[in-house]
Amino acid sequence: MSLQDELNALKKRLEIRIPAEQLAVMHRATEELEKSGLKDNVPKVGDRAPDFSLRDMEGSLVSLQSLLERGPVVLSFYRGGW
Amino acid sequence: MEKAFPEIASFGASLVAVSPQLEEFNRRFARERRLTFQLLGDPGNRVARKFSLVFQLPEDLRKIYLSFGVDLEKFNGDESWTLPMPARFVIDQSGIIRSVDVSADYTRRPEPGHTIEVLRCLTGTSAGAQGMDFESCLRVPDRFSKAEARYQQEGR
Image (cartoon, chains in turn green, brown):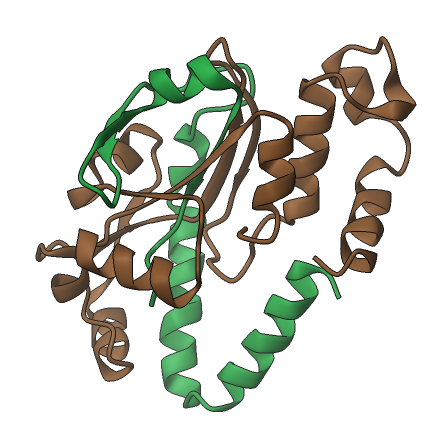
């Protein structure tokens, strides 16, 4: 199964357990986000990535520039571990 | 992404994952999932904002999250109830973005195989695309569907 297939299957199993009205709230929020056009302003292929410095889990500052000096960077944004 | 990490690293690329979680929760997450790539903390989504990814949860949705035990005020250490849309960028060494995957729907995630193929073309290491530029390399027929099949067969 591809990752997306696994996610879809998991989503189905989880959503069965969620009351319909809660599901509706969740889906509505996703739709609003789509309609908001926020995605339109996300940097595109060919744009320069904004530089940044953030702390890793040891508390050390890591900059995009320093990572790029060593090779290409796969930069992932996620909501959290929950 | 943990499963894809060794292959990503084999291209000389680094993998970093950014979230607004407090450090203690990032550490817990890394421990539980045995992650070996870097998690970076982005308090208040300051950096995610630069990438236009930040949105605020509506009130009715916050209540639902709380009912699931997800208290973003606690996990993120602020009251904003803001989150980043899930996104993945591949950035080349000159700082230019070469691939973007972003979704308003957090249940849709880009396939790791897709990222691997982008890196393969970026580093010029695709066997089937010798001497091709990046764009042509990506357009090699069935590149991504074959990549998915290979990625699954290898049990990653």
